[in-house]
Length: 248
Ligand SMILES: CCCCCCC/C=C/C(=O)SCCNC(=O)CCNC(=O)[C@H](O)C(C)(C)COP(=O)(O)OP(=O)(O)OC[C@H]1O[C@@H](n2cnc3c(N)ncnc32)[C@H](O)[C@@H]1OP(=O)(O)O
Image (cartoon, rainbow, N blue to C red):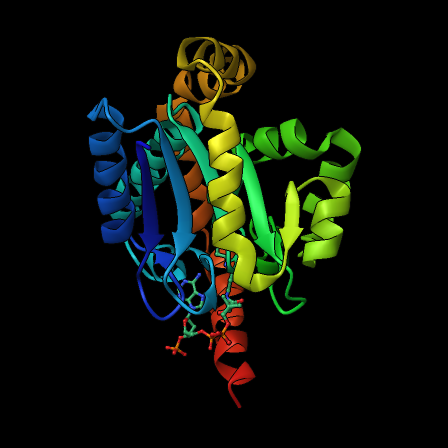
Protein backbone atom coordinates (compact mmCIF):
# COMPACT_ATOMS: atom_id res chain seq x y z
CA UNK A 1 0.00 0.00 0.00
CA UNK A 2 2.97 2.34 -0.52
CA UNK A 3 4.05 2.38 3.10
CA UNK A 4 7.64 2.05 4.27
CA UNK A 5 8.70 1.08 7.77
CA UNK A 6 11.81 2.85 8.99
CA UNK A 7 13.44 1.10 11.93
CA UNK A 8 16.04 3.05 13.87
CA UNK A 9 19.00 0.81 14.58
CA UNK A 10 21.99 2.34 16.34
CA UNK A 11 22.60 0.19 19.42
CA UNK A 12 22.61 0.35 22.31
CA UNK A 13 20.21 3.31 22.61
CA UNK A 14 19.57 4.69 19.09
CA UNK A 15 21.40 7.90 19.90
CA UNK A 16 21.46 10.21 16.90
CA UNK A 17 25.15 10.25 16.04
CA UNK A 18 26.33 12.29 13.05
CA UNK A 19 26.48 9.13 10.97
CA UNK A 20 23.03 8.01 12.08
CA UNK A 21 21.53 11.46 11.35
CA UNK A 22 23.08 11.52 7.90
CA UNK A 23 21.86 8.04 7.01
CA UNK A 24 18.41 8.86 8.33
CA UNK A 25 18.22 12.02 6.21
CA UNK A 26 19.39 10.21 3.06
CA UNK A 27 16.89 7.37 3.57
CA UNK A 28 14.11 9.86 4.07
CA UNK A 29 15.08 11.75 0.94
CA UNK A 30 15.03 8.52 -1.07
CA UNK A 31 11.57 7.65 0.22
CA UNK A 32 10.36 11.18 -0.48
CA UNK A 33 11.52 10.84 -4.09
CA UNK A 34 9.91 7.43 -4.51
CA UNK A 35 6.46 8.23 -5.82
CA UNK A 36 5.15 4.79 -4.86
CA UNK A 37 5.65 5.60 -1.16
CA UNK A 38 2.92 7.65 0.51
CA UNK A 39 3.56 6.92 4.15
CA UNK A 40 6.29 5.99 6.61
CA UNK A 41 6.00 4.26 9.97
CA UNK A 42 8.90 5.30 12.16
CA UNK A 43 9.89 2.86 14.87
CA UNK A 44 12.88 1.31 16.61
CA UNK A 45 14.71 -1.96 16.45
CA UNK A 46 16.44 -1.40 19.83
CA UNK A 47 14.49 -3.17 22.57
CA UNK A 48 12.89 -0.74 24.98
CA UNK A 49 14.35 2.38 23.37
CA UNK A 50 12.77 4.46 20.63
CA UNK A 51 15.71 6.88 20.62
CA UNK A 52 17.91 8.35 23.37
CA UNK A 53 17.97 11.57 21.36
CA UNK A 54 20.95 13.50 20.15
CA UNK A 55 24.24 11.78 20.71
CA UNK A 56 25.81 13.40 23.74
CA UNK A 57 29.25 12.35 22.56
CA UNK A 58 28.80 14.53 19.46
CA UNK A 59 28.22 17.51 21.75
CA UNK A 60 30.88 16.86 24.35
CA UNK A 61 34.66 17.29 24.14
CA UNK A 62 34.72 18.13 20.42
CA UNK A 63 35.77 21.28 18.56
CA UNK A 64 33.53 24.13 17.31
CA UNK A 65 33.76 22.97 13.67
CA UNK A 66 32.41 19.57 14.73
CA UNK A 67 29.57 21.12 16.72
CA UNK A 68 28.63 23.29 13.73
CA UNK A 69 28.66 20.30 11.36
CA UNK A 70 26.63 18.22 13.78
CA UNK A 71 24.01 20.91 14.33
CA UNK A 72 23.66 21.55 10.58
CA UNK A 73 22.75 17.88 10.20
CA UNK A 74 20.32 17.97 13.12
CA UNK A 75 18.58 20.92 11.46
CA UNK A 76 18.56 19.13 8.10
CA UNK A 77 16.91 16.01 9.47
CA UNK A 78 14.34 18.02 11.38
CA UNK A 79 13.40 20.12 8.35
CA UNK A 80 13.04 17.00 6.17
CA UNK A 81 10.94 15.16 8.72
CA UNK A 82 8.78 18.07 9.79
CA UNK A 83 7.99 19.21 6.25
CA UNK A 84 7.72 15.76 4.68
CA UNK A 85 4.94 15.33 2.12
CA UNK A 86 4.54 11.75 3.26
CA UNK A 87 2.27 10.62 6.07
CA UNK A 88 4.49 9.94 9.07
CA UNK A 89 3.27 7.76 11.91
CA UNK A 90 5.52 6.93 14.84
CA UNK A 91 5.26 3.63 16.63
CA UNK A 92 7.00 4.59 19.86
CA UNK A 93 8.16 1.29 21.28
CA UNK A 94 10.52 2.58 23.97
CA UNK A 95 12.06 5.49 25.80
CA UNK A 96 12.00 8.70 23.83
CA UNK A 97 13.77 11.60 25.56
CA UNK A 98 14.75 14.93 23.97
CA UNK A 99 15.82 14.34 20.34
CA UNK A 100 13.90 11.04 20.43
CA UNK A 101 10.77 12.97 21.33
CA UNK A 102 11.63 15.47 18.60
CA UNK A 103 11.53 12.70 15.98
CA UNK A 104 8.13 11.59 17.22
CA UNK A 105 6.79 15.15 17.33
CA UNK A 106 7.63 15.55 13.63
CA UNK A 107 5.20 12.76 12.80
CA UNK A 108 1.56 13.29 11.89
CA UNK A 109 0.40 10.75 14.46
CA UNK A 110 2.06 9.13 17.47
CA UNK A 111 1.21 5.71 18.87
CA UNK A 112 3.03 4.78 22.08
CA UNK A 113 3.47 1.45 23.85
CA UNK A 114 1.76 1.28 27.23
CA UNK A 115 4.79 0.53 29.36
CA UNK A 116 5.41 2.88 32.32
CA UNK A 117 9.16 2.30 31.94
CA UNK A 118 9.05 4.20 28.67
CA UNK A 119 9.03 7.96 29.00
CA UNK A 120 8.86 10.73 26.45
CA UNK A 121 9.49 14.48 26.52
CA UNK A 122 11.91 17.30 25.92
CA UNK A 123 14.10 16.89 29.00
CA UNK A 124 16.97 19.16 27.92
CA UNK A 125 16.80 21.37 31.00
CA UNK A 126 17.63 18.33 33.17
CA UNK A 127 20.93 18.10 31.30
CA UNK A 128 21.71 21.78 31.91
CA UNK A 129 21.09 22.60 28.25
CA UNK A 130 18.27 24.46 26.56
CA UNK A 131 15.94 23.18 23.87
CA UNK A 132 16.35 25.48 20.87
CA UNK A 133 13.45 27.66 19.68
CA UNK A 134 12.38 25.26 16.95
CA UNK A 135 12.10 22.32 19.38
CA UNK A 136 10.04 24.65 21.57
CA UNK A 137 7.86 25.83 18.66
CA UNK A 138 6.99 22.26 17.75
CA UNK A 139 6.20 21.44 21.37
CA UNK A 140 3.92 24.47 21.64
CA UNK A 141 2.22 23.50 18.37
CA UNK A 142 1.59 20.03 19.76
CA UNK A 143 0.64 20.52 23.42
CA UNK A 144 -0.07 24.24 23.71
CA UNK A 145 1.86 27.09 25.28
CA UNK A 146 1.16 26.51 28.97
CA UNK A 147 1.90 22.78 28.98
CA UNK A 148 5.03 23.34 26.88
CA UNK A 149 6.22 26.15 29.14
CA UNK A 150 5.93 23.93 32.19
CA UNK A 151 7.28 20.75 30.59
CA UNK A 152 10.28 22.51 29.04
CA UNK A 153 11.32 24.24 32.25
CA UNK A 154 10.94 21.08 34.31
CA UNK A 155 12.37 18.83 31.60
CA UNK A 156 9.39 16.56 32.13
CA UNK A 157 9.62 12.99 30.92
CA UNK A 158 6.02 11.81 30.65
CA UNK A 159 4.82 8.25 31.20
CA UNK A 160 2.66 6.98 28.32
CA UNK A 161 -0.54 7.78 30.24
CA UNK A 162 0.65 11.31 31.05
CA UNK A 163 1.88 11.83 27.49
CA UNK A 164 -1.56 10.90 26.20
CA UNK A 165 -3.27 13.21 28.65
CA UNK A 166 -1.15 16.21 27.73
CA UNK A 167 -1.19 15.42 23.99
CA UNK A 168 2.46 14.53 23.43
CA UNK A 169 1.15 11.27 21.91
CA UNK A 170 -2.15 10.55 20.22
CA UNK A 171 -2.74 7.02 21.35
CA UNK A 172 -1.39 4.52 23.90
CA UNK A 173 -1.83 0.82 23.21
CA UNK A 174 -0.57 -2.47 24.68
CA UNK A 175 3.04 -2.99 23.71
CA UNK A 176 2.32 -5.90 21.36
CA UNK A 177 -0.16 -3.78 19.41
CA UNK A 178 1.98 -0.73 18.66
CA UNK A 179 2.84 -1.79 15.13
CA UNK A 180 -0.60 -3.07 14.17
CA UNK A 181 -2.16 0.12 15.52
CA UNK A 182 0.33 2.28 13.59
CA UNK A 183 -0.63 0.36 10.45
CA UNK A 184 -4.34 0.82 11.00
CA UNK A 185 -3.83 4.53 11.66
CA UNK A 186 -1.83 4.73 8.44
CA UNK A 187 -4.68 3.07 6.50
CA UNK A 188 -7.04 5.76 7.74
CA UNK A 189 -4.68 8.57 6.72
CA UNK A 190 -4.04 6.96 3.31
CA UNK A 191 -7.74 7.27 2.55
CA UNK A 192 -7.37 11.07 2.36
CA UNK A 193 -6.37 12.46 -1.05
CA UNK A 194 -2.65 13.26 -0.96
CA UNK A 195 -2.91 16.72 -2.51
CA UNK A 196 -5.42 18.07 0.02
CA UNK A 197 -3.69 16.45 2.98
CA UNK A 198 -0.27 17.71 1.87
CA UNK A 199 -1.47 21.27 1.30
CA UNK A 200 -3.15 21.25 4.69
CA UNK A 201 -0.03 19.90 6.41
CA UNK A 202 2.05 22.54 4.69
CA UNK A 203 -0.36 25.27 5.78
CA UNK A 204 -0.12 24.08 9.39
CA UNK A 205 3.67 23.65 9.51
CA UNK A 206 5.23 26.13 7.08
CA UNK A 207 5.56 29.07 9.46
CA UNK A 208 7.36 26.94 12.06
CA UNK A 209 9.77 25.49 9.49
CA UNK A 210 10.35 28.90 7.87
CA UNK A 211 11.24 30.31 11.25
CA UNK A 212 14.31 28.07 11.30
CA UNK A 213 15.04 28.29 7.56
CA UNK A 214 15.41 32.06 7.74
CA UNK A 215 17.98 31.85 10.54
CA UNK A 216 19.74 28.54 10.06
CA UNK A 217 23.24 30.00 10.10
CA UNK A 218 22.58 32.09 13.22
CA UNK A 219 21.11 29.02 14.91
CA UNK A 220 24.26 27.03 14.13
CA UNK A 221 26.44 29.83 15.53
CA UNK A 222 24.25 30.02 18.62
CA UNK A 223 24.43 26.27 19.21
CA UNK A 224 28.19 26.18 18.65
CA UNK A 225 28.97 28.97 21.08
CA UNK A 226 26.48 27.66 23.68
CA UNK A 227 27.69 24.08 23.62
CA UNK A 228 31.37 25.14 23.63
CA UNK A 229 30.99 26.99 26.94
CA UNK A 230 32.94 25.46 29.82
CA UNK A 231 29.87 25.53 32.06
CA UNK A 232 27.78 23.62 29.49
CA UNK A 233 30.54 21.10 28.85
CA UNK A 234 30.74 20.60 32.61
CA UNK A 235 26.98 19.97 32.79
CA UNK A 236 27.20 17.41 29.99
CA UNK A 237 30.13 15.74 31.70
CA UNK A 238 28.15 15.43 34.92
CA UNK A 239 25.13 14.04 33.05
CA UNK A 240 27.26 11.44 31.26
CA UNK A 241 28.80 10.45 34.59
CA UNK A 242 25.33 10.09 36.07
CA UNK A 243 24.34 7.77 33.22
CA UNK A 244 27.43 5.66 33.90
CA UNK A 245 26.84 5.53 37.66
CA UNK A 246 23.23 4.45 37.12
CA UNK A 247 24.67 1.15 35.90
CA UNK A 248 26.20 0.68 39.36
C1 LIG B 1 21.18 26.44 21.94
C2 LIG B 1 21.11 24.95 21.75
C3 LIG B 1 21.38 24.18 22.97
C4 LIG B 1 21.59 22.69 22.84
C5 LIG B 1 20.39 21.92 22.45
C6 LIG B 1 20.65 20.45 22.47
C7 LIG B 1 19.40 19.65 22.32
C8 LIG B 1 19.65 18.27 22.81
C9 LIG B 1 18.86 17.28 22.55
C10 LIG B 1 19.14 15.88 23.02
O1 LIG B 1 18.57 14.96 22.51
S1 LIG B 1 20.31 15.64 24.24
C11 LIG B 1 20.21 13.92 24.67
C12 LIG B 1 19.15 13.70 25.67
N1 LIG B 1 19.03 12.30 25.98
C13 LIG B 1 18.89 11.83 27.19
O2 LIG B 1 18.81 12.55 28.16
C14 LIG B 1 18.84 10.34 27.33
C15 LIG B 1 19.95 9.82 28.15
N2 LIG B 1 19.88 8.38 28.24
C16 LIG B 1 19.05 7.73 29.06
O3 LIG B 1 18.26 8.28 29.78
C17 LIG B 1 19.15 6.24 29.05
O4 LIG B 1 20.38 5.88 28.46
C18 LIG B 1 18.01 5.53 28.27
C19 LIG B 1 17.84 6.09 26.87
C20 LIG B 1 16.70 5.68 29.05
C21 LIG B 1 18.38 4.03 28.15
O5 LIG B 1 18.64 3.51 29.42
P1 LIG B 1 19.40 2.11 29.54
O6 LIG B 1 19.47 1.80 31.00
O7 LIG B 1 18.78 1.10 28.65
O8 LIG B 1 20.84 2.37 28.93
P2 LIG B 1 22.09 3.14 29.61
O9 LIG B 1 22.88 2.17 30.38
O10 LIG B 1 21.63 4.36 30.31
O11 LIG B 1 22.88 3.61 28.32
C22 LIG B 1 23.65 2.70 27.52
C23 LIG B 1 24.84 3.45 26.96
O12 LIG B 1 24.36 4.47 26.08
C24 LIG B 1 24.89 5.74 26.50
N3 LIG B 1 23.91 6.79 26.16
C25 LIG B 1 22.67 6.92 26.61
N4 LIG B 1 22.08 7.97 26.05
C26 LIG B 1 22.98 8.53 25.23
C27 LIG B 1 22.95 9.67 24.37
N5 LIG B 1 21.86 10.46 24.23
N6 LIG B 1 24.05 9.96 23.68
C28 LIG B 1 25.16 9.19 23.79
N7 LIG B 1 25.24 8.09 24.58
C29 LIG B 1 24.15 7.78 25.29
C30 LIG B 1 25.10 5.59 28.00
O13 LIG B 1 25.99 6.55 28.46
C31 LIG B 1 25.63 4.17 28.06
O14 LIG B 1 27.00 4.22 27.64
P3 LIG B 1 28.09 3.24 28.26
O15 LIG B 1 28.14 3.54 29.75
O16 LIG B 1 27.59 1.85 27.96
O17 LIG B 1 29.35 3.60 27.57
